[in-house]
Image 1 (spheres, rainbow, N blue to C red):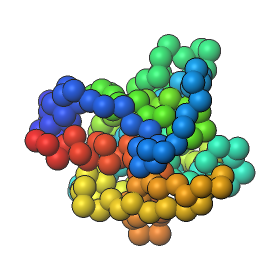
Image 2 (cartoon, one colour):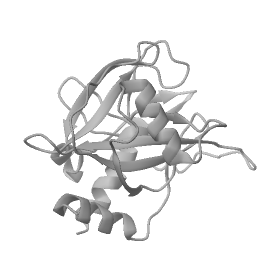
Image 3 (cartoon, helix red, strand yellow):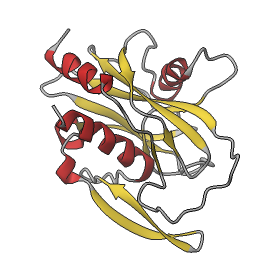
Length: 199
């Protein structure tokens, strides 16, 4: 196992706390008995270049959920998926043409609840060989990479806010160049950064 894989595996093995889009908004009252839809996203770390990078997408502006936002490849669990990992690998193939057998899955980050009613499980995996990335036109506007060192730097994360459905909502951001990484993606990455920072 590579030093990076070993460090990530050790971080994932520690006790973890679930996260949500409401972490910074403690006054939010969530409905009792709400039913969340399970989803899986792939936090793919490419290790074959000069420095490790995280594979990210900019979602199509035509999508119903989170249009135009920065996201990991992934989506809701379908009936044919074995589990959230299978869903994340399937979606990564569909969205960015990442071969399903290529990622080396190391484990999962804590589940994350989104404002759109999903319980998202981030699947951490190493991508150790290059592949021909292609954006699925209906879902993905752009594919890009952010240095792992950038997203694992806890100091890069800031709290910003905007009005949403009549109230002010606070959220994490971690901008990278022209890409505004925020919301659920930034929250999950910050949780990952915090876990890795403890070592």
